[in-house]
Length: 506
Image (cartoon, rainbow, N blue to C red):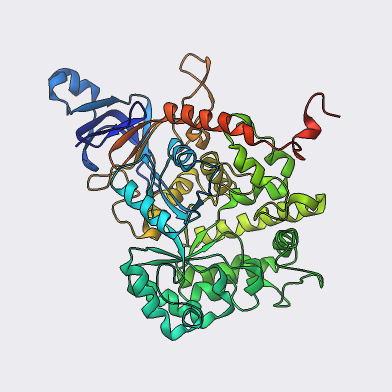
């Protein structure tokens, strides 16, 4: 049955046809077409190459038709993107704010931290799976042991890992967060093994407090599915084996934590990192999940706080959480120096080289944003993450593949990630070719020249199709704008980032 979501969207349809679209398959290959694409319910069932000459000869009645037809001449269809690490935060930021932004800029599936509690995360995932709400499909990222009766020393015991993971799988969990577990490599290996045996995956943020025990190479060879962020790589190639923490370092002080996380890249052994470490990571079969966008502010915080979409689309609650404040996670720019930005600029360059070498040598790079933190606004950060992956030197088609087929394979979802019959109808209809310009995926599109040489602005992703439900992305963005404007009543009396640049402010 076709469900109506007002003027925001509708679907799935008994039969939906997208006509005359160029197709980016999602496996790294180039665009092809145009195609007429048949979707029945939530599945792609046919793709027929469209020959306009033959069609004119046969007549209009020879083409596929359906309950709804979308004319897509001049548009590109690609798979919906799969964000393997993101956040939904808490009130007063509306949950729809996150969902609408993610969808409007191309994310149809996400591994989201259960920021609003385990029960809420699982319930929202069920509602999305049933298309009861407008939201990406969800696979909540949950801590080891969450939702089970196991506690304390039971969770610290490698011998118990099989029982714990089996209980998590029985609860419908798919993705285990291993963030604080690097203190015990035996425990890491036991959980990774149990996860594979139970059809689950493991996601590891290698906390600097534990990299003396578990760096990226050790985690990879212990069998974890994916390593998040940048942690543990430079530490795997240190000449002295121990990160040179200042003697006053406090992991609980995020200013210390993030400063040294960038600085370690300036004294790691580059030759070892880009060869021995890269080769071993590939050999051990781990997936890289860089989430570069959430760290970009560290190399230029003023730029990050002055992006043009901020006033219209960044929720005031998110802005408030981002303001420098030791009380909030990810709000550590209260003593952030030009040296710190140098460390992180250097880190980005070498980190990018590692991603490039890892990919070139056969490693799998996947897609995640970790957005809704550190000046990374949801949705916009999805596109920016692709741009930052392109910055590593990876081909644009490879970059798109990280967010489509690579992420589907990492998640263990064989019917996601490609535009092909037999795959789920998670699709993007884009005004322009994102293989040529990733910025066409932004809701505001990008400037381009039309066939007459006139400057135009493209329209971004016109429709996101999630599980056969066709969304009106322009309307989603209008709803986001309303939420943001209503949130301005939460603005603080003193804004240490904005006040120096406001006209009339002393």
